[in-house]
Length: 211
Ligand code: PRP
Ligand code: URA
Image (cartoon, rainbow, N blue to C red; front, side, top):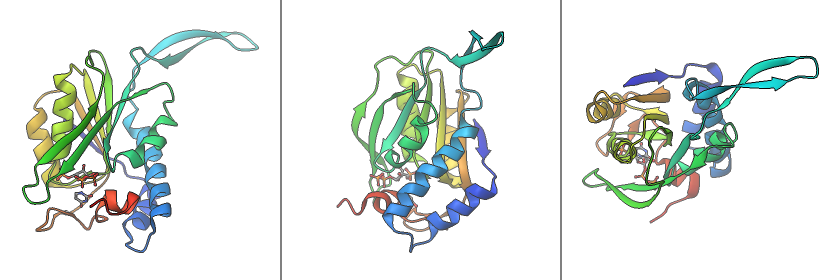
């Protein structure tokens, strides 16, 4: 598994505001979308394209267009939904599938409560969106789901991650074609398995308390 930690002052600046507990949900949502767009540059470096001949007003030339089958974007509901708009803005022709997952806060085991994905993902590049990689249980389960459907490659984009989460995902995916793009690598987890320093509960900060 390839791990890329995006290192850019604009990302760090926006992350600092996102982490601040005084940042209200409207600003938090805007920042998550903006961060997604910045991380997408890194995450789509290897997006599959085909050559295409076009005519400019002056001459003919060769460019590229996104290959078929188009990439599949998979936000993990709930918190991953906050990243979706920032990603589809960049690849408007991509398709979107959904996975709903909720980490059981006692056992830390993720429960999948919703799934709306194509049955067959052969030859597809899949982009998984989830702002938080904590223990890694949710992301590992999501990646397994996609490979079980035949995905060729998975690129996971998380705003924050931990060393524990990276190790857990790495162990699960083995030698399959996975890239993990992070906005920042945090120190680790606290006793409740929250990311430290982190930003708190991403879903709650985006959308309010669900319980
Ligand atoms: C959060 C987050 C990840 C998961 C990370 O979702 O969005 O999906 O926790 O934790 P893990 O790496 O330990 O599995 P949560 O389960 O809180 O659901 P939500 O998005 O509905 O808030
Ligand atoms: N899920 C979150 O939303 N935040 C964390 O810090 C860990 C899991």
